[in-house]
Image 1: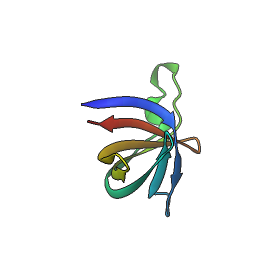
Image 2 (image 1 turned 180 degrees about the vertical axis):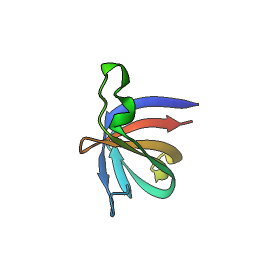
Image 3 (image 1 turned 60 degrees about the horizontal axis):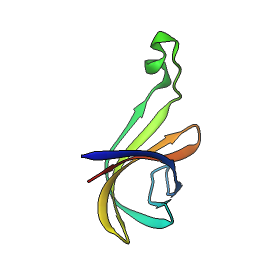
Length: 86
């Protein structure tokens, strides 16, 4: 089961891949990238709706509350925590 948050986060990493992120006052260390994909803006323009290009990463990360799976999104130069798997 997942929960959606779509909350802004701070992300640090090399080569544009997330390595560490900060969410709700806690620090998470990315220990594995489980997936990475890009949603191209042109794909979503049908019906007059424009959505900017988005890069998505599904990662396993460890924080003070333990390990978990998180989906991070980079869109228009900002990072969001989109989903958390229970």
